[in-house]
Image (cartoon, rainbow, N blue to C red; front, side):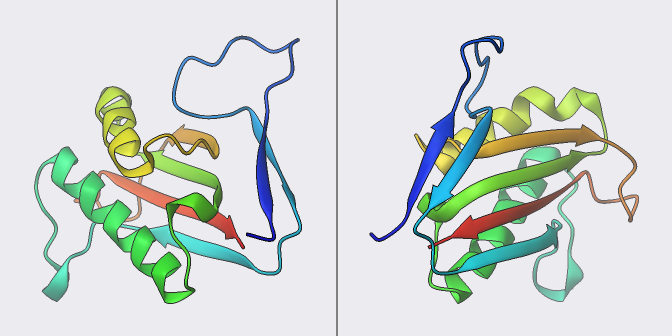
Length: 129
């Protein structure tokens, strides 16, 4: 590995409460991939009705874009998740931990209206290698 993604957790900031880091610094990267907002679309445009299925499907789509660039979870430097309702915060965190394991990119979560009413979330990301 010729690059490094280092966690930035300044002592003056509050202790992290979840599976993220306050910031990341990337050194030695050759390529940067910007993953457009991915949504819970499956084949033939089918959208699952429940949040957990939508979240896993959206992560599958993010990882498919990374795989196309020859990257994966360890390459993630930053992830932004848009949730349609604050009620999905905890489940989103659990599923994100399933996907990321011990990897801790910089994370932002925004509660907002999503483009299509059936979509309960959207995820965009930045990855490096």
